Image (cartoon, rainbow over all chains, first blue to last red; front, side, top):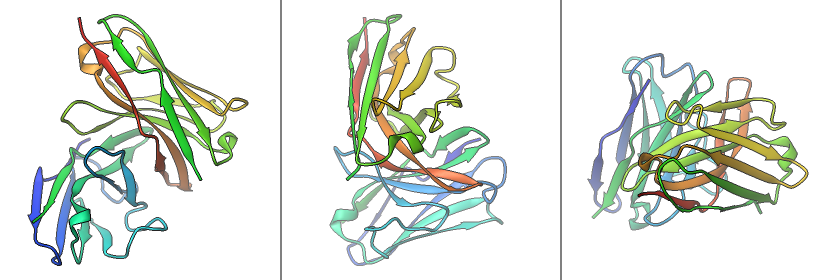
Length: 109
Length: 122
């Protein structure tokens, strides 16, 4: 299966942005969805796991959900800050295979 | 704090081999599965392989199956990735990553290393 994300999104500081992740086959609800942030030049870090859980240290401006009707997941970031500018990847599984989405570049301008 | 330090990357010719290492600290390595994830130039993340906490189960992405082998030595807190038959498309940054079990239904990556660069070119 594949996870499809928009190539890029942009929004102004202080606003809210939502990034989608659509699963091509199989149900989005069958396996957890994670979201990883990768700032320019850095390694990825985890911002959401188990569909909608935030690791300690991740601000509550980050939230996520899944939508069975559209077979997709979404990551929302509210109160955008320039430090949120990064690539965001969704990830899920199928049996013992892990799949990452193609990534979405978030520009905060 | 959790630290994952990769090494072993370099420049090799197509068809050659390379062995990546990842030394872990700050957690009980014996109790956790580990992943390798790569990022090709200008592109996104691609999952390569995962190994269970005790090394008994190993799974691979389709693009590396039969060429790469993952292993871990719990006595040395070390994860390896043996890469044989390297191809130009294997070029990229290889990240070592720690697995965290959520429940019986799944797991996720909670810590990533800084990566080691592999370049395959003639």
